[in-house]
Length: 444
Image (tube, rainbow, N blue to C red; front, top):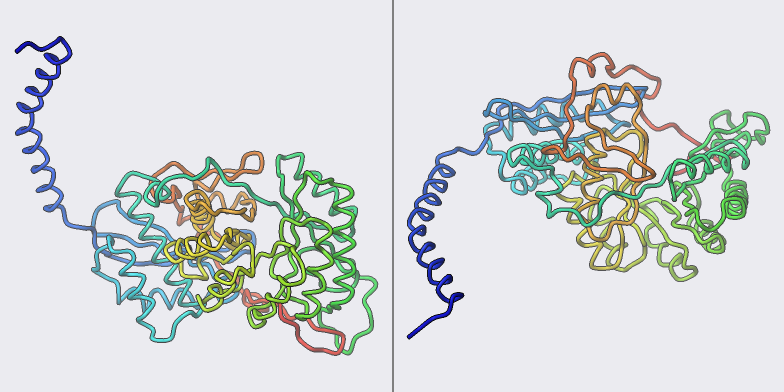
């Protein structure tokens, strides 16, 4: 029997592979033994880093392991009740977690979630988020990979964002939107002030305050609706169709007013209207969907699956914009995104200034790895924040780029953080009150 040249070469290659096989098996066995012999890192310490760069309270959890130089950071920022997160972490979660291995992230999340008996509160969720994100950071540092690689890799190269264009008057809003457009932004959230009253997301002129039965910040829903619709009309005319418009309703209207506003805004071809209703009025999203095709984003105030599940599964919203640390961290946010993908709902994670750069990097990582990404809210990092958090997500031409360094790719200068401690204020970081003319407090 004769064989050709190709068959002869295959025979030689096969013989070589057979000769090498014992050595390959032996090498693999040595690696396996070494891996089994290497103990998993254990939690040696859990600490909380608090800082207030430029007046914004940020809280970060740091987990230190028993392996030299191996640690991780997680965002636990809850600005409005910032002083409560530290004791939740240090007095309750830390004793529960000390000496546990860091490799069981899901198990640790579930056990922390269950340990308080009552669940889904913002203090607990933010505390767990700090733990959860720190464990992902440790996992990435161990692997020598950014977290997005551990979560399956990129679905896109970078993350499209929207900027905030606001002003006391229409012309100022339009000018600011044009500035962002010149910087490469394709999507702009527009907000205009309400003369003499406390509109949301913009400054306002003090003169022109209507008569009221109190001297607190004042809000008039009908005036807000008229002014916001006029703003959308002007922005669409002045900015053209190539700029995507977003607007934050901030849950200040009654359900009937919210349905009416969403219906009238349909003509301006919005990218989305944000938070038209508070969590207490979720049933009215069915009326919005039945009356108009305006895209709706919702979820900034959500804490519990009982809030986002029905809106997603009944396809009553177009974008889910949960505050990731408020929902409990990176792990549950991935599950929210996966659920949303099955029902055609996209993500638009909450990304204001009162999220630490660690939290922003978690947002951008989710944006990269989730197929149903929609858009990301962008807030710039000031100099003091960047001095404390080294390695923030990078903005280029309206896109955010994730770090390619292991973990979240961010290091915290704790000496710089100590230079910006929490400061006392009249509300201790809390949210102010806004009232109707008769003195009724409104939801916001």
